[in-house]
Picture 1: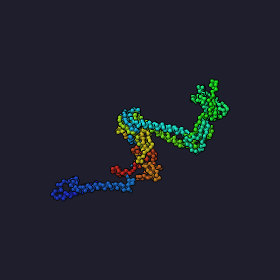
Picture 2: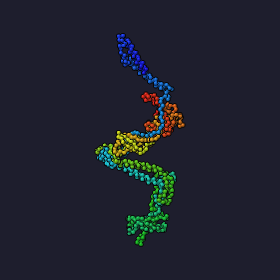
Picture 3: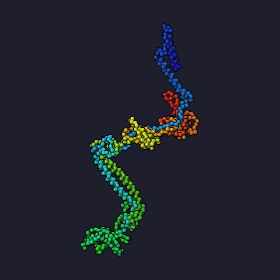
Picture 4: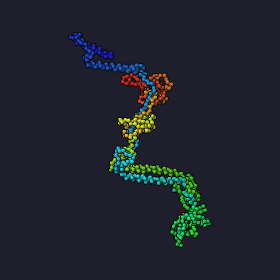
Length: 579
């Protein structure tokens, strides 16, 4: 201001000098005194501009001098700004989670053809609400019918293959197929290789023997199944009881011209009988003994081969010629690893074939499609006569009575989100919408160093107020505490110690507290007289954070250093925000 006054005096002096040099024509008492503004106007324009520039430069120099004084005038400015503090106090705090997500129908089914066809009829329209079972369209697809037949035939073939393999693998324990006596046994030792189809012994059922006898047609009708007969065995010089097993009305003609029929006689073997023994059977009819045309030879009731049904390595064998065995008795044990692997492969092939059949049947059913669920028809654009290519999604049925919203919640608040919590929603300025947290996933996605967790929100949409496949805003109260210690977010710092430990601290004013920590590496200058104290924090909002432990109510805590810039445009707050 003094400079300006000097400039004004200069202007006045200049004006007076100009008046004095104008001559003595006008007496001083007759000239009226001019104002400063008039004097300023009388100055040349160039001189006025020079005065203005000097005045502005002077103001700039004054401001710069003040700044330099604040910064360097008292030891470089450390601690020079105004120290701002806050007090730990009891208050309430509410953590609100806000964001947006995409809506989708809770239940949705799409009908897709995997074979080409021709549209015959369309029975529903885009946007129509249908119930499950409502006919939608009809498509003629010979390829779909052929695919079902081929897939079903493939399944039948593999099922038979599996049944055979399972039956074969039962032969890992090679057993007697019926009771009897072993003959023509093969010498097998542990470690020997055995192949599928190898015959290792013959077995003959000698528990009973069969005798075939021929009788004259004169006695036709007198012999029948179940009838008792006497069997004479000359080599044993004895007769034993037998039973007619079957009568066969064959026509055997003897050289004498006699016509004969045959009968099969069974004889129980108590151990003395064997095959090829000569015997004859007589039967009493009406008190008369009927003799056969000729004796016959005893035969084993049945014979068979003991054959391996798998390939593998012999584990043990008890094959011995003339060994008397019972039905099911294990005679050879085989390691059938290859056969088990074969069965596993067949089972895998069968599973794949059944899935192929299921897909083919579903595709054929889709040619005469009905709505799979209650809902709205979406994306149905076909018309009769259209050729539909394989892989075409024909229509989607979406149940929009319930809408799901997938939202993402950050790691700071996810622990507070629980199923059943109410959620406030807004879509396209439509307010008053509410939903409920349905699921909370514990699988996170990390972006820019922040982990977020997907949360599913369920919305009742019976009135159709929520649009599907569209963005929607959500807001929910993650947590709330009505009586807790709080501090502004700026008061809380995350620091490291020289030992590499990361701590959450506040800087407490006054004498050194017992729980203060040393060797803290902060990224800012902390005024003298403030001590780093570890604290446990809880929930937070946009301004404050809950202090669970570490400091007590009424504790004075450093917030920031406010420099002179704050009075000149809001610049230069020396401090860091929470985190």
